[in-house]
Structure formats: structure tokens, C-alpha cells
Length: 323
Length: 122
Image 1 (tube, each protein chain N blue to C red):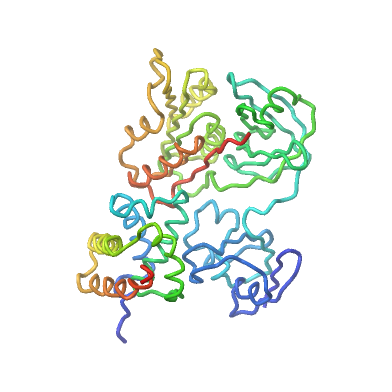
Image 2 (tube, rainbow over the protein chains, first blue to last red; image 1 turned 180 degrees about the vertical axis):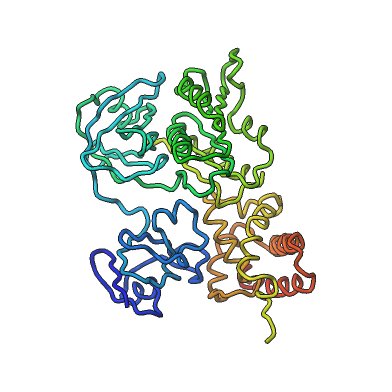
């Protein structure tokens, strides 16, 4: 017999009951469908305690790492506190340590959190301007390397949040952020696996974090980072990424410019997805990360899968611009 | 004790091996790819896994009513016998690729056939 807590109410879970049985038995609504551990409709997260491995079969490694599990086949062997996925979590106060112009429309914002933020590079936080105005930004910093949380904020036309960040926010100001969420990040364990990272615009933020996190954690397989921009100005971490590729033999950086002619030898003319797929027609066994423009991400997910990447090895984060 | 179809095909491991191969085939098949071209490919892949488990005679709790409810929106978009046959064809090709015996593939096809009326909401 174990205790199961959901929304601050505790229930008793006997040996032959699943988490789904117990919650449904008490009239708690949890979406479910196949009840066989396959369809993943009843996905939940253990916020306290560890779910049994049998309840995590078939889940992405990044979801397993965050203690996600399937309620329909979870027979807890310890007390668990559980929640439905993507619930709004407690907010954290942070101070702006610096705002740095990275390109004509992207700034890097560094934040110092009042309490330590538990995050993985590539996850995102919601930044609040006021009670009801929040936007999601991916984390480019690496917990083991950087003292601050770093975000890359692109100026969205008429964007209320990004206009405020670009023109009014100053270092020293206080802001509120959410806990870090999202499943687009590096997990250790397959250090030799080749990795393909494709991003457009400020979709480079999570990829920059993921690449450096993988290197920090001793990833030994090739890491190929393709960054796409309409113009050269948008290749906003060109120098940093060139330096990184000089320091680490297994890391390479391929900048791509789609809408203006370029003469520099080390920049490729063309759309980033086309360039990346031309170089990688066979992706069987690869781990793939895709971030940025939603149309690019959608097309890339399908094409990298058709080129042989396993569904479980494709991690994506589409940036949907909101005014 | 005689083995069930699910065990003969290779159980859960066979489903895991088949799901990506099958999903790639249907996405590449112009007759049916539109029905499978979901924004959320992870959810779509999980659905394929449920379908394969059922088609292989594995443990599932789907009823005829579930089948009707789950496919009604697709029938509205024009899902018909041609599409149903195409799915079964891709499934057979997947199993052939995985070296499953022809007799077992025929059993899988027969099992799929029992759901045709419910899937197509006839």
C-alpha cells in the first residue's frame, strides 16, 4: 500500500491498482484512452517520488528524466505526488544581470535567480511582464558552466513582451519567471550517438545550450549544428560557434543564409533544412534536435524521420510568434 | 500450450520494431499520407503503436464503439475502403520486411478485417 497525492489530496493505492484506477475511482478526471500503456494519453508527472520503470516504457528519454509516467500502467512502489503535464508551476523571482545586443533584432538577456533554478539547457521558461502577460523563451545557458540563465529574445513585430524587453528592460530590474519546462534537451547515456541540430533565428538559443551541455557532459560522437538565417546579420553567434568548433573536434557549425548572396567561404547559401538534409541523407541511429520557425520544424520532423531517424530520437521545439 | 498470434509475431518487441517502419511507409504513401500527417508526430506514433498491438492480437481494451468514435472525424474527411486496404497493405509490407511468416501476416490481415465496419463507421 502506498500513498498517492494529487492536487493536495492523498489517496491510498493498493498493490493491484494503477494510479489511473485510484484517481478515476475517486472521480478525478485524467484523460485516458487505450489503458494498455501505448497511446500515452494518460501521461502524468511525479513531482515527488520516483515512478516504476515499467510505467515509463516507450516514453522519450527526456520525459523519463523528468519522472513522467503513464498512469494506466503505474503500480507505485513508493509514495508519489503526481500532477498532470504542463501545469503552471510556482514562479521564481529573478534580477536582470545584463542585456546584450546580439543582432539587429535579437538580444541576449541574462538573469540571476533568487533561488537556484533546476533546469536543463534547451528547456524553456515563461517570463512574466505582468500578471497575465507571459512569453516562453528557451534557455541557452548551461547549468554546469554558466552562473546566469541566458535567453535570446527576438523582436516580434508589435510584440508586447519583446518590445518591452528590447526597449524598456534594464539590468538590475526584477522579473518573474516560471520553472523550466519542456523536453527538448540532452540526456547522457549514449555518448557516441551522432547528433544533428537544426535551428532558424533565435531557435539557436536552445541548440547552443544543448550542444555545450552535451560537450560538458562528455559527448564523444559528432555534433553537427546548422543555423539558418535570412541574412548574415542573423548569424548572431558566428564567432562563438566558430571558436567552439576549433576547441572541440567532434563539434561542427554550419551557418546558412537563405535570402542574400554571401561571399564568405564558411557560410553556405541556402535554406538550412535543405543544406542539412543534403549533408545527411541517412539519419538512422542519429539524435535530432529541431528548433525555431514552426514550418521549418514541422517539415524537418517529417523529413528527418523519413531519412531514418527514430521517432524517439527526434526532439523539437517550434517557436510560435505571439504579438 | 499453443502460442497466441501476438507471441508468434514476437510480442512487444515486434511492435517496437514495426512502429517506425510502418509509420514511414504510410507517410510516404500518397493514398493515405494526409490522414497520418499530424502536427504532433509523437502522438501519432503512439497511436500507431496502439493500432499495431491490436492488429498483432496483443492486449488492448478497444471496443467497436471506440473504433467508431476514434475514426468518425476521418470518415467525415473521406476515409473509405481504399484507404483501409492501403493501411493493411503497408502493414503486411512492414511485417514482410521484418521476416514475419506469411501465414502470420495473413492472420494479422484477417484480424484487421474484423474492424473494417467499425473503422469506416458503416
